[in-house]
Each structure stands twice: as structure tokens, then as C-alpha cells.
Amino acid sequence: MRKKISLIFLVVLLLTSLGNIPSYEASTIEEQEDKIKEIEEQQKELEENEKSIGEKKHETNEKIDENNKQQSSIESELSVLDESLQSTEQKISNKESEIASMQEEITGLENKVSAIEDDIDDLHNQINELEIEIDDVTLRMEKREELLRERLRSMQFSGGAITYLEVFLGARSFTDLISRVTAVNTILKQDQVLIDEHKADKVTLETNIKIVAEKQDELKDNKKELVAKKEEIEEGKSLVEVEKGNLVALKEELDAQSQEKEKLLAQLQVEEEELREYEISLADEQSIIAAQASSLEKAKKLEEEEKARLVQLAKEEQERKEREEEEEEDNGDNNDGDPGNDNPGDGDGNVDAPPPPTGDKIFLRPTTGRISSPFGMRTYPRPRMHYGMDFASPAGTPIIAAASGVVSNARYMGEWGNTVVITHYINGQTFSTLYAHMNGFNVTAGQTVEAGQQIGIVGSTGFSTGPHLHFEVHKGGFQGYATNAVDPMPYIINP
Image (cartoon, rainbow, N blue to C red):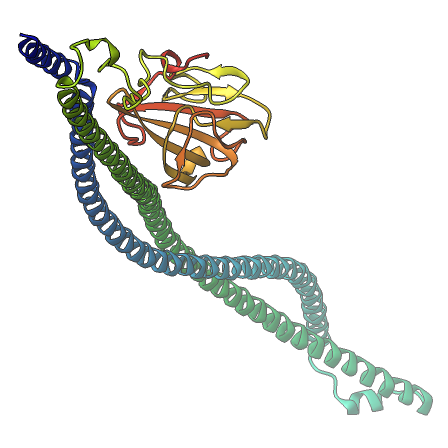
């Protein structure tokens, strides 16, 4: 009877012991497996993102190549236009020199015409003087003619010409004879002088009139020739000015084409710069993804190690239970059936993992200082989304990790300046935190950090107007300006 009671007690004890085996090991292992699966899914997502970024980089490189070809083509066109412009400007300069030369020639001809007109005026004055002189000579000649006529009338009245013999025979004395001969000679000489003067005046008058007329005709011909030459040069000047106008219009057209090409080239250069920046951002994303992949691989390894540890703990616990059962079974045959000495639920083998964070308040405040700019749209200096929150702190203020995790990036990142990105795995969810504009950081990519550990100091690097910390929270892996950025405020334990 006593043996039968002991057997019943052993069965009840065994069932009780089996019922009291802790269940946390199985559930924890399942949780670890879920975590590992989730990490593997995130790894696959990262691989897909990396593949997508690779395709985008390829497309961007093709666009850059096409952009460079267009730039090269436009630069060649600009070179041709520049040569045409230089040639046209030289032609315009030549035409201007030609016009200036023609204008000088025209001015010279105008001066010559003016001089000829002055000579003609002088000739007119000479003609007037000669006409006056002609009048005087004519008057003298008329007087001489009248005197000669009078002499002839006297000679006719006295019977005709007087001979030398009559003059000699009519003398009353030798002295009278001498006087008579002298008088006759004087009269004859005077008459001859009058005749010679009359002839000379007539020749001079006729010669002067002829010379003045010839000079006047010559000057008129020269003036006419110069006026025709001037008109010819004026006509040529007009034609050259028309050619110059055409060249100026061509230059303006070439200038317009050149400006349009330069504008297009500038647009292509801006586009290339944007493509280069985008290419750099894609490279940054690739680097970030690589760092996150490394972080996830480490996280996966840690979770697998934790799973292995829990499996080992479960195995050890199971072995311990089996040993206890064997001992109880052995002792069951030797005791009096009093089960009160052992408590199967007690023992020091139950090592529970620390509870994970709960709720939304999962991040520490990353630094001190006031919140100078919250998450949301900004209007200054231009409308754009502000994907984080800013803490205004003096330069050199310590910055801490908001939670435990793995550093996925620690380097200079464009407008963010010196930047650290940390990947966290909290409550079965992946988060990424970003710390930007640092003066410096003391962590490296791939490094594991604890919550509250200093990772750098406040600065003003990158696109920054003063010392502050720009802090971002991303649900999932960090993807730059992506839609997984969330307002950090609800996640900070003590904002």
C-alpha cells in the first residue's frame, strides 16, 4: 500500500515538474528567429535598394555622358560662332576704316572744291579789274584815235603831208631849221609812241581776256570733275555703309546665337552639376546601404549568437530537469512520500533576458540646448522640408548616441557636414538616427555604441548658419531625404 502511494506520488510529481518547465526559452527562441527573419528581410530590401541605386547610377552616368556630348557639341558651335564673330568684327573694322578713308577723301575734295571756288572768285575779281582796265585802255585808245584823226584832219587841211624839204626850205635861219627838224622828229616819235602803246594795250587786253577765260574754263572743269568725284565717293561710301550695316546685323545675329548657346551651355553645366551631385548622393546611399548591410549582418550575427545562447540555455535547462527527475525518481523509492523538501520551480538556472524598450519614448535627448527648429516645412531661405529637429548649442557641446546600435556612417556628407548615422534595432523595429553639422566625431563605421555614449561634439560644418545639432529619426534604414524620416519629438524620452 505504501509502495503504491509512493508510485502515485512520483507520477504526480513528474507531471507537475513537466508542467513547471519554463516556457520562456521556446518563446524567446521563436522571437529570436523572428528577429533574424526580419533582419534577413531587411537585408533583402537593402540588396534591392542597392540594385535600384546601381541602376540609377547607370542611368545617371548615361545622362552625364549625353550631357557632356551636348556640351562638347555646343562648345564646338560656340567656337565656330566665335571665329565668325571675330571675322565679322574684323570686316566691320575694315569697313569703318574704309568709310573713314572715304570721308577723309571727300573732305579733301570738298576743301579742293572750296579752293577752286575761291580761285574762281579771284578770277572773277581779276576779270572785273581787267574789264575796268579794258575800259581805261579803250578810253585811252579812243582818245589816241581821236588825236590821230585830228592830226590827219590837220594834215589834210594844210594840203597833205609835209616833206622834210619843205621844212628845211621854210626855215628862216639855221637855228629855226634845227628847231623845225627837232619838232618834226618829236611829233613823229610821239605819233609812233601812241601807235605802239595803242598796239601794246590792244595785245595785252586781248591776251589777258584770253588767259582769264582759259583759267576760268579750267577751274570750272576742275570743279566739275571734283564734284563728280565727290559724288562718286559719296555713293561708294553709302554702299560701304550699307555693307557695314549688314555686317553689324550679322554680328548682332551671331551675338544672339552665341548668347543662346552660352545660355544652353550654362544650363547643361548646371544639369551636369546636379547629375554629379545626384551621382555623389547615390554613391553616398550606396555607402550608407553598405554600412547598414554591415550593421544588419552584425545585428544578425548577434541575434544568431543570442539564439544559440538561448538554445544552449534551453538545452541545459532540459538536461537539468531530466537530472532532477532522475534524482527524484531515485529518491522516491527511499523517502516516506513527503514531497515538501524540493521546489521544482526554484533554482538559479532561469536567466531571463532584459526586457526590451516599450512605447514610443525610445531615444535619449542627443544633446543639450534649446530646440531652434522643429521637424516640418520651412519657408526661409526657401520653402523646403526640414526632415529633423535642430538643437542650438555652443560649439564643442557633447553629442551622445540616442540609443544603442551600430554606426553605419561616420564621415563628411555634403550639406550635412560631419555626420554620424546609427542603426538601431528596438522592439523588433529598425530605426536610424542621424547627427549632422558636427565639428568632429569619435566613432567609426561598423562600431557598436551604447545609449548615452558620446559620439562627437556640436559644430557648424556643411550648410549651417551657426553651431547646432541637426537630429533625424528614420523608421527603417537611412535613405537620405526619403519618406521614412519621422518627427523625432514623439520618440525622445525627455525632449
